[in-house]
Image (cartoon, rainbow, N blue to C red):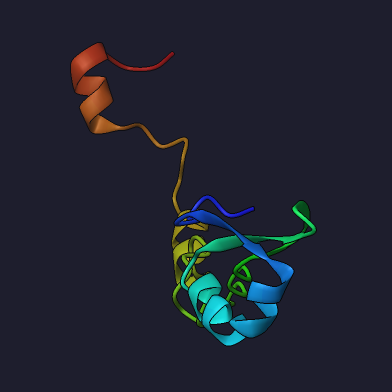
Length: 92
């Protein structure tokens, strides 16, 4: 059951058959219907969850690109950082 359901209405089987197109349109808009037969709930008419769409190429950040990985690989991570050395002294 979707959390975006507008409301839930109870209708008889006869009413559901007679007004199926109308109930279908309303269900597509988010409304739920419980259909009864001889006063007992039998089934529901519910909206269909929208199909999840695949993201478009380039719309998802997949992290660093090839150039960024190359730049990261070329950094000398063990070189002294002048700002750190200025604040805390040299490394031993």
